Length: 163
Image (cartoon, rainbow, N blue to C red; front, side):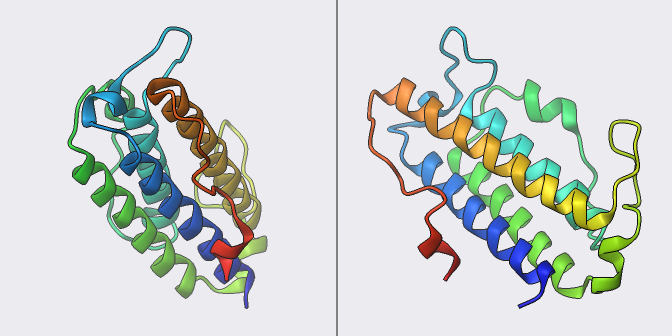
């Protein structure tokens, strides 16, 4: 396995779990609810996750042509669950394709865009994106537990998901 393949497997596992989290809500209103003290709904986190990966990996590394609207990731207040899942599945597909064609020598090269005013290597940025995805997945799972009152684990980040 290549590091690009490993990254693709991690991203695929986490995105599948994000979809599982969305499906675990009793209805779409719960996905978009915003309890006191929480800055984002699960719906906005799902849009942000999809937009982030599609922009940085799909468009920048894979040439997908995706155009990001980061403001809409956080300002949208309702979207059907099926549409959220569709966007996450598109992100998974774009990431898989982009990483499969990425030459390993590019991992040590600068990423095409500056992030926060600095230029990271492509490999480090992809690792950062995996961590960023996992962070927001955790936020979504706690949002689900708070909103639904169901403290059941969905098996997020299970090593078996990488097999």
